[in-house]
Amino acid sequence: MVSSTRSSKRVMIVARPNRSADWGANVSVLLALAVPMLGIAVFFALLGAWLILPFAGLELLALGIALYRVNYKLQYRQVITVSEDSVCIDKGYDTPREHWQLARQNSGLTVTAQRHPWDAPQLCVHDREVYVTLGEFLNREESLKLLELLQREIRVRASGSSALREF
Image (cartoon, rainbow, N blue to C red; front, side, top):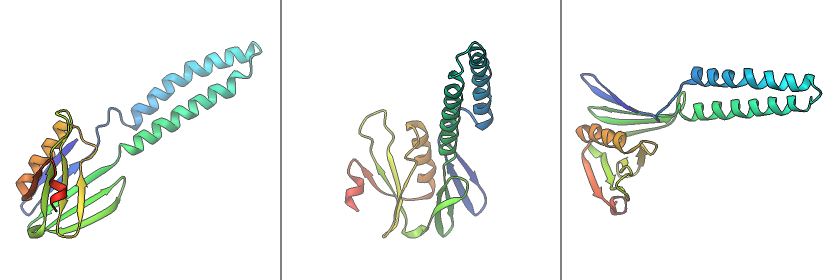
């Protein structure tokens, strides 16, 4: 998902992966599965098949851990802030874990064409020393939207199938 906010002195572009459900919806799914599963497990345990209880619990625990890890991974975001004199890129989950600040007049956008018509183009903001890849988790439409937003703010320095090799 790509969104942008424009103010008088800067543009902030936020790119994040698509999330089909938030954490509350995942907990609802987990509870909807847990209630009947544990009900059936308790029924069979009362009939003497008590060994089903730990396996039902482990199954729910594994599903809960998987849902949590996927939800956490989908919290990732990239924030590109373009001001009059700089381009700041922050990448991270809850807080920025990686930060780059490039001078706007020295920065450029490299667009590497997709290998297949369904793939998204690879985007890279760079200056003379640093290359920062953007939107690698986006689908084609969202990557093209990010490209359009970045083209308004940053000059395209290279484009094509071998764009990264030219620099």
